[in-house]
Amino acid sequence: MSNQDELALGRTDEPGACCPGLLTAPLDEDQAVDLAKVFKALGDPVRLRLLSIIASRAGGEVCVCDLTPAFDLSQPTISHHLKLLRQAGLIDCERRGTWVYYWLLPETTDRLAGILSRPVGEPLPDRRAPAGAAS
Image: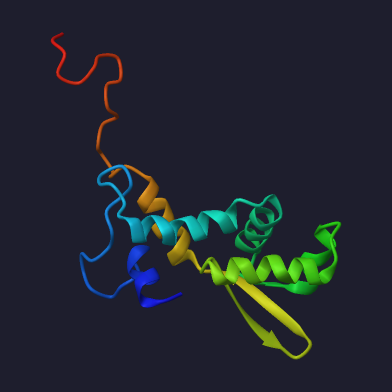
């Protein structure tokens, strides 16, 4: 991901530089484009299952040799899906001998959760009456 991608997802070392949540301010065009890449990666059931398997693995990482049997897909297809998850910044990997090990990048999923959620303690809007209507 580029530095611009990192900033759009709130990845920065500067305090207070994280982008606002979706429910508190509209996304600008660049943020929407960058977030769409991540959501596109998550929009495929195979990739979503792969991410879930990786995220829930005890020890925090999983070998590709353990992922492939969970699907009725070829190893190159699984590798392609993993590559797309990696490009979206959701997982990372390391080659160890013959095998590649994958792990979740929780900073990305945490930031996605922050973008999509309402600040803690903020009440839900009252949808029963139109804004500005007298009660």
